[in-house]
Image (cartoon, rainbow, N blue to C red):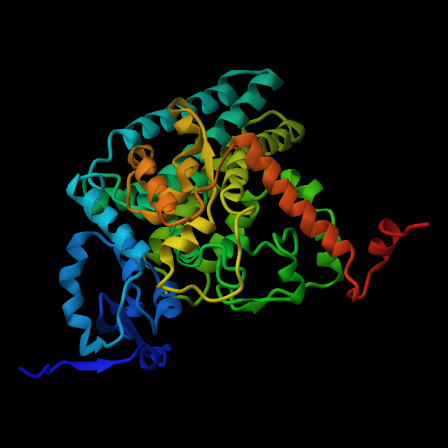
Length: 447
């Protein structure tokens, strides 16, 4: 019988990559997601930036098996005539299927319960130290414990954004708002918007927001060309002020990380007060407001302004450890300047990620980020399963001659500083310098 299917080529599919005209291919079937982009739980960024190509691997990574039954309503009747999958993609999908059959995506363990209990203990101890102790040391320790609380709340927020950590979706949403908005002051809506973009465009200088830290940091001299951020929709201008900061970034990295939380506060407010489509906006705003009620109130219980400032610095500095951890996994890894693609998913995730080698008893400290490669390949996988699947991922990388990069926590710090230092020295030696300000001239004059 003659094939009655309608086919389009990959080149024709590429034309459907604009707002209002978004087509994607999943295993050779073409779907029109132009209207769905407004309701997509993962935000509009993944669909807007992967439209016009086959996205099977990305779909498999982010969606459970139950999501496949909803695809038919988006099917537009076309099939991709030149659809094919690479050998590494076939092996990757086979791994996802095997892990699904093993039930690993559903076996979450008791990580969330233990973390919640730890958070409650940290909060109670911190409050007790402030209200019931008079010594400066006790108050500073309380600040540090509050920073530890924020780190653990960050892990819960991260996990609950990728998969359901609680028994129901409602409780999962409650855990997100509680640990993110209320306890940490960071909008979970902002985090999901930002983090999904990071996963989709891992280490793309133009599309990955986790590498766009100008004017403070750049991980590559490619930023000197004033690239455009397609996430923030603005040009990242490399001017004389940025050059001055970047030229010293390997010295300022850790001090800035101590106060990196301020940026997350600001980004949360910017999103919640913007005209973007923010799910549960009122709920998100009320959660953030609750943080800005209890935290200043707690700080005000300290006896004087000196101790209050020291307490805030202590809490922010301890939390800075987590911000450093976020950077270690990607700053020293391979980068590229291009939009994300759907046909090299496995390669981009492994090339752009660095694991942190550590014993199992230190897993609580890293919150799952120590298996960054596994997490990026299987973002729905509970963190208690990442160590179990690591050997399978490593074998797949070896079989396809792909990197499986891992380093100790201290080595990863050294690699990150080396990356920053390399870019800093390059910023000082540009043959066509941007106009320099007086501060630059004073600090960089030789002879």
